[in-house]
Length: 168
Image (tube, rainbow, N blue to C red; front, side):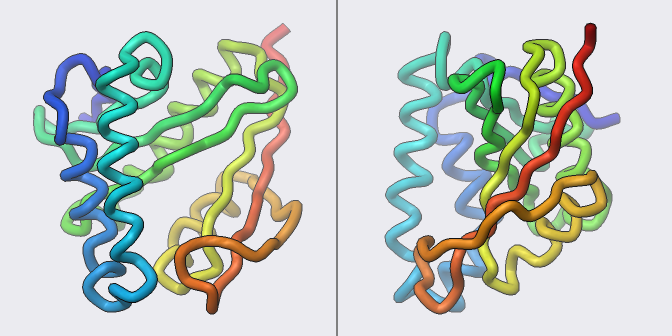
């Protein structure tokens, strides 16, 4: 059974390790574009552990039989208008089992508890992120805009949104 564990159960460096493994093939195949992202992944880890009551509270590690298989994060600071889905990655050997979608459903559940009205997420046009784009579409997210940005200038970014039903 997939369990969503709080960051407090892990040690500094564990988030960075999951992200590096999850996106390692991007860095390996296109280091000229993705190598600099590694510093951002390390900073994400540092911010989560340095700020357990704010940033760290909005990060969870997904575990199967006690072993990490991925992680997800979110930013509720714009509530109730919208919440932002942040990192959502699954280790390469655990892809294709629906864990990424289950992580997003967990974030949506947390957004609904907070009465957040719309979930937003940004992903890349890069082919590596096609499974993520398909997953978001299957969950009901719709594209709201495309814009330049991201590590690889050959591919822009796509922002998606999903209106959430109020709990009231």
